[in-house]
Image (cartoon, rainbow, N blue to C red; front, top):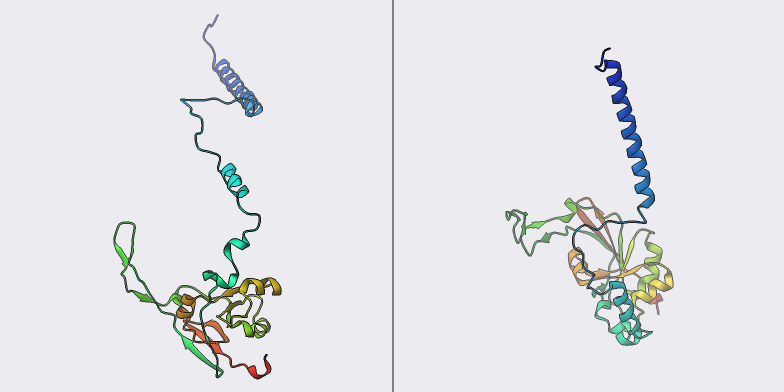
Length: 219
């Protein structure tokens, strides 16, 4: 009698081993999935969390604040953040161009320390970015003109007005449209001097269309 296994027997043994292994792995996966929420393992030392819960801290501090914070800040007319840049009324209608050159006030270095752009380097941002919408800049007294002139995607910027003029937040809420303040740095960057003015990009330049309005009909 031949006591040595044949090739056929060896193949059957390998197939049986593979089938048993696959079945075992599938069963193990099912058991792990079923018990994933019920059991966890801890490896190494553990310590309780010493820091207070951030959400609880926020809720506790919020509970100590006054119900109405507006009285703490005073009227909006006194807020420094609500101070807009001053522009003179346009006396003539004209169109002019401005190149908004920018000069670096500090050097820019690569991660390795090499200087990429030195301090004082001057460039035209319009070589790299595009202004997709127009900017319509007005004083508050001419906002009605701006609302008729500006498209849906255009930005309306308010220059400084008179003491009795309403602020940008109030006007935004009234008209249901975002209205922004003209910051001094934006005024300087765009080369603005008068209002109303419509700003749009034309190639590598900004086209400024200054508009003289007939104020004799205005109160």
